[in-house]
Image (cartoon, rainbow, N blue to C red; front, side, top):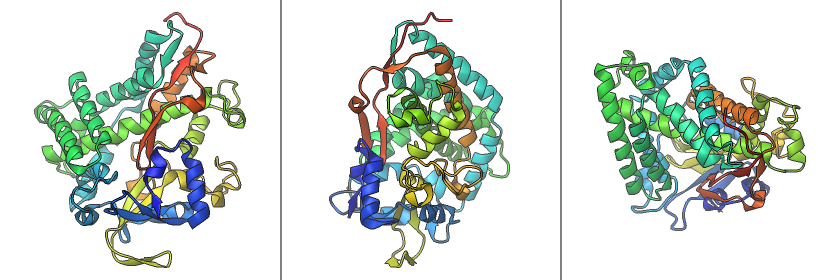
Length: 406
């Protein structure tokens, strides 16, 4: 049985996944905590991942309700906090209406304005540190940049944005459902006040667009719940991919550095970003639950069993990437891209274009302004934190020749 705790805290999760793949193949048994209160299946194979993610809900669902009822009370399962956000996006008859509203609202976002605001905010943040000759490009750049841009897109004031960000941090740090729920309630309260104001005084933001969607006919409670999830899924993965992109571009990683030599001009930021998404996806795993009793890969599986799709394992599956763990020479593609970092099927990320714009612009601005950037520590000494399948940098300290602010 594979433990979920082995991944988030691992310095090299790809190596851990490769070991699991060697022992089990495309699917492995998985346990979420030492009490046995949560167990399921781990998908490592690319083709099997595509099958699960593409299923419209007949065999695999995004509704975790049945499973949550089976988890032992008080179980400290790392998946529980994440599933606490699920009601607004995955459950009940309103799920279709919620997804419709989500997609309509995202489609109405002015991407040119987002790119311009990202560039403006990026230059301002760079201007605060460029004369110092050193910075934490995660805490002083990626996180505040993404948070600022997403606050504007959603319709948050700076004060509400800070409140929601603090509540979301509580949810991400929670190890049980009660703690996660408390953080979610605080986020919903802050967002709910904005929703109520936008109901009578609309603006050009996602909250107003959701309220104006007559087909979805969302209540204020619905809108607040959707926006809470949009904030979590729009901010954290985006700043993680920016940090991963920066790390990949500036770290001395031997052969990998030659593969992604943006500074040397061999590839574009866009293509470098694709490589980062493929090898170090910001959302390392996506969970579905079995919608019915079924035979899965020749084994009988009950209803409500978690099926965790490791995006990182699927995207580095040698069966589709060849002998490399970095995705070169992949023989197939889906919609012009082969990696699964943005998800797949009806629940694929509808805001992937927006996230890409923010990430690309962030990388372009830092590379255009600050040159000869080096890590302030060895790559092996960078600090990571993780829980379950998720992991992220604690900080990205760098040094560079001081530059006069423009």
